[in-house]
Picture 1: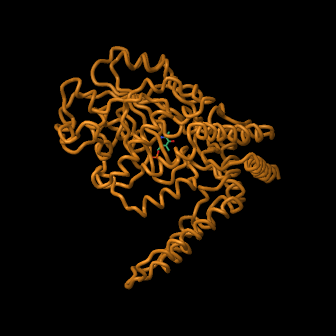
Picture 2: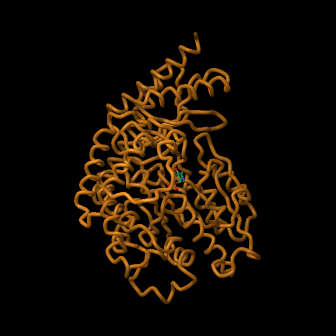
Picture 3: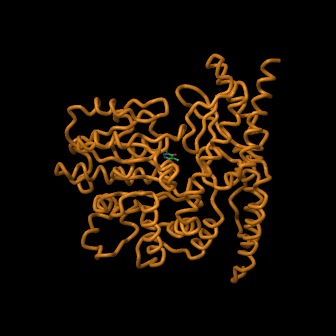
Amino acid sequence: MSQDPGALFARAAALATAYRREIADAKQRPDHNYSAAVVDWDATTPEHGLPAEAVLEELVTRATPGLHASTGPRFFGWVIGASHPAGVAADWMTSTWGQNVGNHQAAPAASAAELVAGRWLVDILGLPAESSVGFVTGATMANLVGLAAGRSEVLRRVGWDVEADGLFGAPPIRVVVGEDVHVSALSALQFLGLGHARVTRIATDAEGRMIPEALQAALAGTTGPLIVMLQAGQINTGASDPFPEIVPIARAHGAWIHVDGAFGLWAQASPAYAHLAAGVELCDSWATDGHKWLQTPYDCGFAIVRDPEAHRRAMAFGASYLPAVAAGERDPTHYVPELSRRARGFTTWAMLRHYGRSGLAAMVAHCCAMARQIATTVATEPGISVVNEVVLNQAILCFGGNLPLEESNRLTLATIARLQADGTAFAGASQWRGQWLMRVSVSGHGTTEADARLTADAITTSWRAVRGQNAG
Ligand SMILES: *Cc1c(COP(=O)(O)O)cnc(C)c1O
């Protein structure tokens, strides 16, 4: 086995370069689905080793047919960022350096990068400067961390130490969410012993925004520990809760206010879109992703908490945090569930450094403009309707909407299948208000106006083919 990794690393860089150069013209979907990919990978446990160079070739050969085009410019499935080259290069260095960012002695540079990238992040997202930031795997874990800080604080206020004594026998915490909450936020509640089913769900409007009067009514007479979970960026519509109206209601009842802002919080990064999340900075904790709109490679998310002490209390190991942290020191592990951990500060720093405030604002605005372009173009075709107000980067489309629900569901799913098989562009299905829709999420940095045109054409063409078959 060669000791010098030069040839191996050069080969990996060449393969990566070729992949990224080809992705724009490639089909925006895998050639193989999951069951075919299992066949591609299937093999018995290797008895003997293989040189690293051969492992790399085999890895790429086995993976390639089942790779989804998440980094492609016409990929609009789920809400997935495009893993920007600046972040990928930083990610290579992160792996190369092999830093364990659990504590600042083991990883001085990585810990410092997190500190500074965290400050930039809070600044760019318009959140309170005193906030602390935990670098986690994604918004699910960021929701868990923010809600854990809230759980800690609302119980501390009634004299209960949840870190030491757990939830058995604790005063109950009332948890309030919007009707159109993301499932990830509910699973965070589930992990924390707060339960996903014992929440109070508050009615939302047509775009999925919590209705302030409904919250007011639900909280009437509520005293005691309370967590209100809000949302910046509903997964289907992109809409955010009306924070300026909601926050005073929640505050009047002493709530900890957490925001799931996995992608929608990034509206704050653009002066043209910041009004959509106006007032979000008034809350107590925020969850957002790096691997969606910031375009870092997977995985990367941020838990941001206004009260660093509540944040540390919830996450630091066994109450050792207070004496251990000297003034001005920050151990990354005190803000996340893990100890040993990938140094996500490097990729976060790299993306923020690459874009800068103005570049980030432009990229966010561009994604929104591309979503609007696709939506307004397809809406000119008879039988296609845009169901949401395309205020951000999300558009949901209905096909044959004047037909009975069952029929339009069938046509919508058939149009999605057709679009995906064609491969010019990729969008998936989503359920909204009891109806199947095509969801187009423009979350990658690389979508050009030409890509938006090609996408609108591909959607329209798929719909015409389905409609034609149906008529015939
Ligand atoms: C994507 C998303 C999540 C989950 O984020 P992960 O990074 O997948 O853990 C939670 N909430 C919303 C609104 C999302 O869009």
